[in-house]
Image 1 (spheres, rainbow over the protein chains, first blue to last red):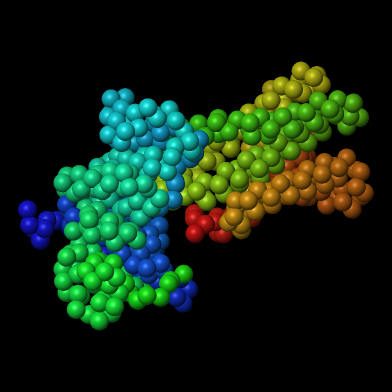
Image 2 (image 1 turned 90 degrees about the vertical axis):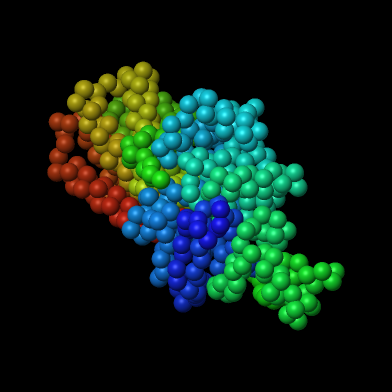
Length: 260
Length: 249
């Protein structure tokens, strides 16, 4: 199905976020459609986390509109949040609770009926069937990420937000996560992904927005971004092996300076 | 596609289940909270004839309430905030007050358990037996008094973000309340300190507990102590709610 015809699961329009007098996000607008993996890339401090926090409802923007699955986050916050699944960067469950207790907790919060069979199926899907009674604090980083992803998907949300989900994962776990993301796309979920890995963005994203100094500087498909920027001198000078990659485009557009 | 919003009671039930389980898994800390006032009560057997059963029980319950509010509640909140547990819950369709109400319900249960254990220990070791109405009133006073320290704990986690600093600060405040409160009440620290302690959160909570254990002796001073206790709770809670941030980042 043509992506143009697909419904929008996230619409951000004219988002502005200030911390005191510092403007972290400047007039950001973007759209994620059902069945699309949308990458939000930017150097440290570019405004990615602030944008994501506003979408999650954790931060109130000074101006702008955010709609999730058609629900305005200001007018219908609970409905908007019920349509998002979130995987946060840091571990975010009580370490004393077991994997099955965490799944039951969030099943209850999202109003999902949790039978033993359903729970077992979920654990089998993330290859944690033997870890059901293990406490979250005893799991490895990769296992914790898998639990976090299953919680993000527990209520079959229209939009899934993944905040640097592969940070710290080994190549096998990373590939497995990519496959899960692609399976979500197949099932018509929209995904908003933030990552510092250009390889990841190139491998899985349908479209990418590059954000810097709080502003979206470009939005396009990875291939189109490479094609449209390959002849820019700053992109050519960023290239290391002659072949222009997404990382070269990213560095060419955002600069070489290291951000705090 | 229809959006499913769970009822508040269903979400609260799930939160309570998880919070009580977490508390149970941290039962060593729970035992410590109960053990300290119980040991003090048992060791004060000799003082009961001099000061009375209500004096001993009310002091011990006050110490237990300080531990629950300062050591238990504030440290658990500081740790979970630092780990992002609250942020993860807040992105779900659950109201912020439900998250906090569930946490407070666990502490409320802790207050009731600690008070019960102190009463049982008082009855078993020191032969202090109260009337049924005195027991009932004392439970109510324990909850009212516990609210002061939960409010103070909330103010501390509102003011301080780092969980280690919260931990050391609450220990220090606990120590100050414990030592000055207890010894001030006994009159060991002089008249001025003794008078100051009487109107401190320690003194007023201890006073309403003590008066609840002898309902016939409830007087104007006890009523004023109750009002001051409620005042402390309101002030600490307002500070705690105003300063509190759900995230340390």
